[in-house]
Length: 79
Image (cartoon, rainbow, N blue to C red):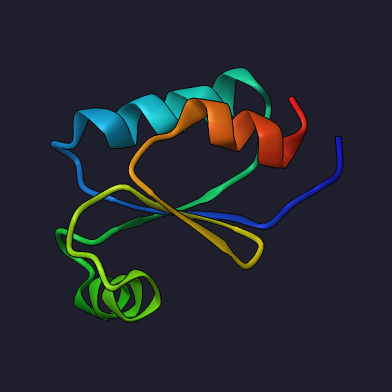
């Protein structure tokens, strides 16, 4: 498995955010998590990158995934 730079923009109350983070943890994939409920700069960054207010927004290297799409993540991460 190639090492990718993973960033997830999430909120504490988002079920799909927790599911995505659990997926990364279970598959031993390192990721950086930003809580956009409290981090206004990261919220702005997320909206600029994705055009979306909804979470999670997941960046895998330069690829943006809006929402939790396990099948797409497995394909991109080759797991």
